[in-house]
Length: 132
Image (cartoon, rainbow, N blue to C red; front, side, top):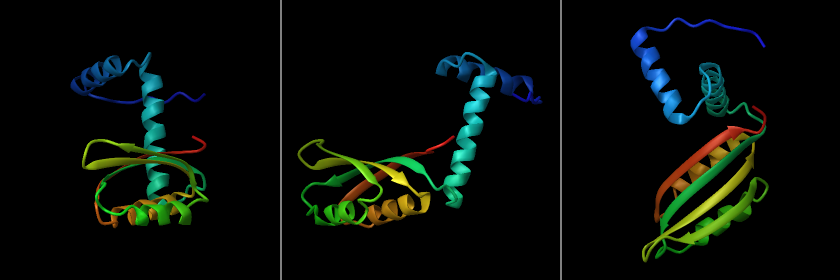
């Protein structure tokens, strides 16, 4: 494995070490490799160049609104949706969890369509490349 060097001021290094300790990293190298992977994944995701992306999409919506638009999406994107979970959060809100795998552009497409559905209050997602 190649070795690289990094110049960083004392104040930032101290803050980094505190974060690494808090997050439980065993070494700076381990943490920096993790940070670099995140940057690479984010860039490839944003460019839409990833062939195989895995994402978890969390959707909170008002359960008084008809669920048909979500059902339609579930069927229109069944090529990338691998797992679904539905949960009643309270008297008003439901949570839908999608686990998807496919091209990042296709995943962004479903996220945009979910955001357009009436009654959807929040959409959050976490993604990574299938091969990092």
